Length: 155
Ligand code: HEC
Image 1 (cartoon, rainbow, N blue to C red):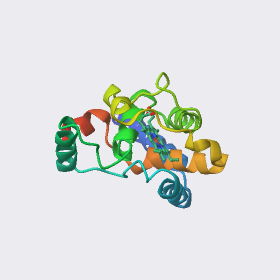
Image 2: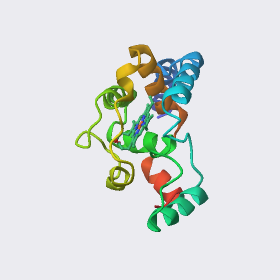
Image 3: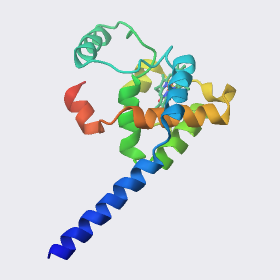
């Protein structure tokens, strides 16, 4: 029994080590953040507080425009991870979506398309490197699952 336990600890330590080496270096995440600031932040807020979502929801119900042009990135990250959970799938989806967006491909809540419409292809003018960096930043910057996000920010 003891041996099995030790074996299991060793395996999980190995798995943790793999996970850590896969995570991109801090510098790449930082670069991704700058890409976000320059190319995405005009529409996507980085995060949103539950109270803000509540107030914005009220405004939208009253027929007003929300204060941003797209769902906040904390929400986008959680939502896309629900459908594309691994880093590889997530990064590929994001790089493709920002270059060739469409309602058919998108995984946002239907209400997002209703309020904001489909995202413009902002990635068409971006380098492959910049797209990769911003997609990785979006993956690693947030760690809430979609279920957690919705529980904390009901809307
Ligand atoms: C002009 C406004 C605008 C800009 C700039 C913008 N977006 Fe968006 N984005 C949207 C809108 C609107 C949606 C929601 C509708 C949709 O998904 O197409 C969206 C949705 C998304 C989604 C979710 C896709 C889905 O539907 O599943 C991702 C991922 C995303 N944006 C990434 C980015 C990244 C990364 C950048 C910067 C490189 C960026 N966006 C810049 C407007 C914008």
